[in-house]
Length: 319
Image (cartoon, rainbow, N blue to C red; front, side):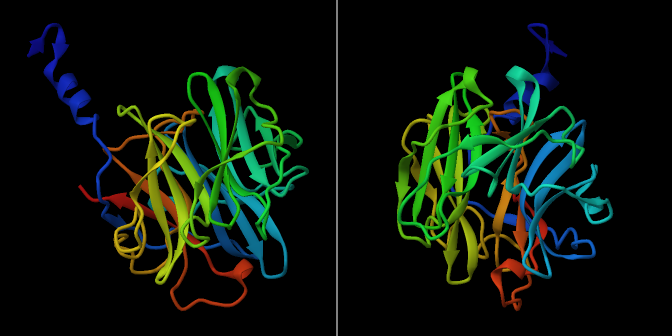
């Protein structure tokens, strides 16, 4: 049956895809999805994009000694296959990566920390090739005060006019910088603005920012340290350059954490990426079908933080 020339099925589909963010969150969780290949003890800091109908994931590694590294997984179609595909080490470290396709210039961008500048980026035409990236370019050259780590855990996102850099400092603050979209890829410079401030534990690291499809809204998640492990708090805004409003911010009712993850293999819901509906620079998420790729670890694991046995897991929002 048609309604003004449009299939009712298509109308229903369009309506069904216009969901607000929930006011509270409850998830189901996979088990651990993959173990590190020989020589690595941890897989963490995941960034994910859809690529030709498959999943493309980059992440951080650590070996049994003192070395951080970087990797990607070969493409896979189903999350159940993540643990069976090859894990490809990178020749140059891109720790805590952010992967996206900058559509205006049809170029893939991999942003990261601990490069030649505070934050750096590389570009490629083929993001599946872990060692096909350009040389490092400066993404941000500034510094912050009152932080034992310095600026860490960047993410990048754009609207129609500007590109924005958000980052943390393990110090209870979230920072932002911006540039005109026409200047990207490029250097955000040295200046940044504190946009959120709280206790160190409440605003620790792993900030991520997304466009909420169909809602004229943006979602920010930030990793916090709780009494029961790492968890994510959420904030919303109507402009990337505007102010952020707390949404799900308590450990007992977080965006995602032990209280609502449904996970039995880990207490920690830590550094990861919401599954985006497109790889482009707007970082769009579908609020009707929220999933979070995260890092978790066995509750009884301890010792040197660098060598904690983090593994990937996937949360799916309950409907």
